[in-house]
Length: 342
Image (tube, rainbow, N blue to C red):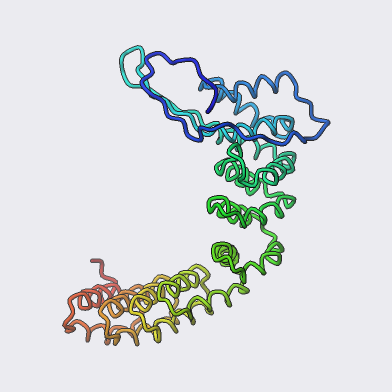
């Protein structure tokens, strides 16, 4: 638990987030950077539970930037202090309270320090590995987030390793951090992950490829949309929606035409309308004849979004459909095409 604080006047309660001990951190920093008395005092104030002292120290350290490099090991420790909240009564008897975000302040300062913080953060991630209580999940996530914001390519290998972490929050944080790097060369190292037997790792790797719009992910997606289970096919449809582009739209149209599950077909119709691609008009017109009301209604709604005049006649015919949800969707779509507001 964080160190004991002096009792506040009329304190009614307090809540500590990230309340276990701060993580150990590497002490390897640039030897030319000395921990001056000023820096020691600022770190002490940063760790304090005085709002005023904490805020002043955080802003001063941020403004020092790389000149505060000697404080990096201490800042990694502060990442583990998390947030501190309290409630109480003020002198006037009214409820009062506040919070101090130690972890957020440390992350802000580490980003401002930039490159000198990279190697100690990488070293910390390598030593922690999630095995010890003091190297908790939230601290690793915070360290990974900082590396993604600094965007120094020396961190890529550590982020690729953290992507395989069994803790989802750590893995996902690593994926988001990798997306910050504009150079897509790291994707070459991730290619084997698309064939991994570990489904969680395989899926997070695929997500990175999809976000980067790298077409090498298509074999993975095609396996999903060809799966025997409808929920897996729906997941693949979501991947296609995220990827976008002509190739994805063609595959989605194929699901709308041929998938045996009405839920998959209904979702495909919705996606085609949301993507706003006029090439979807023909498969959507065919879907107006689908025997399932949900599919037909979604196709009508999608055609209304696309506002293509070719849909007017078949939509008008649906105004006499025996299913109320289909009639309502067709009427709304016709109004949309005509430019009428509901």
